[in-house]
Length: 280
Image 1 (cartoon, rainbow, N blue to C red):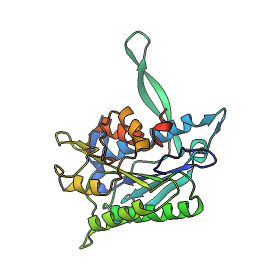
Image 2 (image 1 turned 90 degrees about the vertical axis):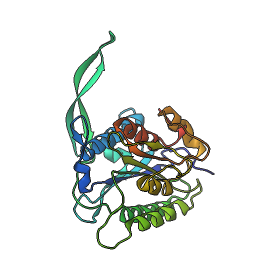
Image 3 (image 1 turned 45 degrees about the horizontal axis):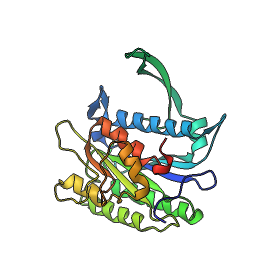
């Protein structure tokens, strides 16, 4: 099979969010929010939407297991398992509820601002270095453990969100380590195919953006690394990509370089969709 098995309560999917929490994530990004703040906001909204999609009356169907892994946030080369649990545990026990303003249609062609409450599952953090290779190794260990217990479940998906190249200080080749660990993840076998890695690089205004490329001929160093550690988009995910306004070609890989806020939201929605059969 090729990453086509649907999430279900009997065979839940597995999503791992790898979140760059290095010091550079304090940079300004959108609507007065830093990269760290905006990334946390998008992830919190995404998980909330997945919870709402999987409601069955007053209960939440556990059709997916989610891990939130931060790297750099506790300082230095830290890698933290912020939270790993089934969907119902996220939905029933957020860290807290936060009041936000949201613009909605007023029914007459205009917009009106209302107060909404959003569950918080991950707090924004920006502190240390960028040990992406260590984060990939941590994710690899999680996936090996999951697949060992659930080989018939949908192949796991990693969504890696970063604003820079891997860096862990000293003479360590963090880029080489990142590529090695990612390739080992993508070689793990399940009965639904290999685990998928999708990467999004948070960009700066004015920088050229590249998305879902088939080769690295036009890419800079940052984008080439992301290209090399990204999975080819399987057929089961191509409808999801197009639904979120990405142009997908036969050999496209699941990555975006220099993503603006809109593309970041679209990419995370794509990566967490579970494939075309589960697009809401």
